[in-house]
Length: 480
Image (cartoon, rainbow, N blue to C red; front, side, top):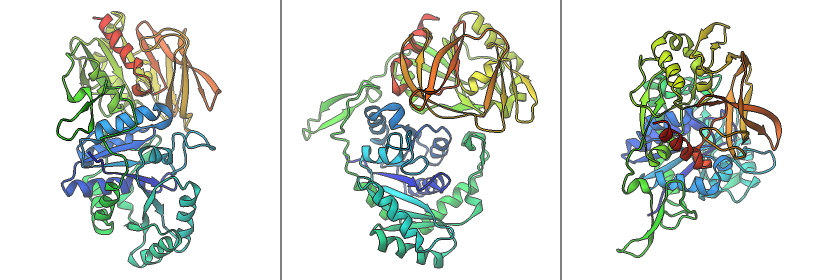
């Protein structure tokens, strides 16, 4: 079972990786291929666009946060069901956790998957210099399989006629095509990056413009040919399945080994009901987090803090992810019925796990960018206020200072933060986490505990340590 795979890298953030990726995904989907999307690094927004274009849930692959074995397992588990896997990189191709090594970078992931890489460059204002640019990326790490180039921001065919030969002469790497300079293809951004698809603010015409540009100006057959030359094979992946209890089994027809995951076999009986807040305000979830919970026996029940007046019945645990509660604070505050049920749920010693935006929602209030205050659920003794600058971005290492619903005291795990808000304590605050960035620097407290509630700024991927999800399931069972 070969798994055709291609990785889309960029020279820097904002170069057009997502535009090129969505264009390719849409173009190949229109050719009746099942396209499995992946995103390198800790990102919730780009995968939402992948999922819409391909109709297949996009996944995250993060070599620093998850480790190589988990990344391989998550990749093969989803890619084996597709005709082609397209992985969108993160930042510039060599940017990751550190300035001096490759961990967490697109290049690291490309080498782990042994995937051919297509480099996206911004060719605006360039001609022969584009050859020098690509040559530098090619020579920086020769173990990366740089297999093709796509030029973004091309003014027209005449411009491309200067860029293409300059790159191919300098590097002998084929230039597979280009996207025209067109503001109508540019994705709108705000303080946390692109606007998620869930909000419905990306017009169908904009997606279609990307796709039609890719069809018209990129050699799709060459892209597919490169993907089919990916060296990794599903028959012999170099990893030990552990997250989804995978196992090896011999196929009687040809004697080759194949990988079987528990999700493809017998399903475990559902033991607990977990309510997941999901709407325009809360939609930052790793799809694999939800899959891991389901694999461990959870029934996932979605509800909307914006629109639902009541919680779903018989919930054993509530999971509130991140998102943009600050943009919907007024509407959230007006849903008093649901907030009242949230407070009663906590008073009954039922568990809630919340991250970032979920933390803000469970606090006393949110002040938006204009300083307008909206009252929130009122479970946590903190107020959150949006700031005009980013306050935290990047990976963190967390050590639990006490037992919680998700971990035991002394446990360590990795996560990431990305927020523009700060917290004001308005009562006695008990913290469960000690988190640090950059090998012990910027140490701070996180993880607020109230009764059976744990709410933290840090976002966690349960594949970094499956015990995190197992502990949530155990907590949910105990709350029944």
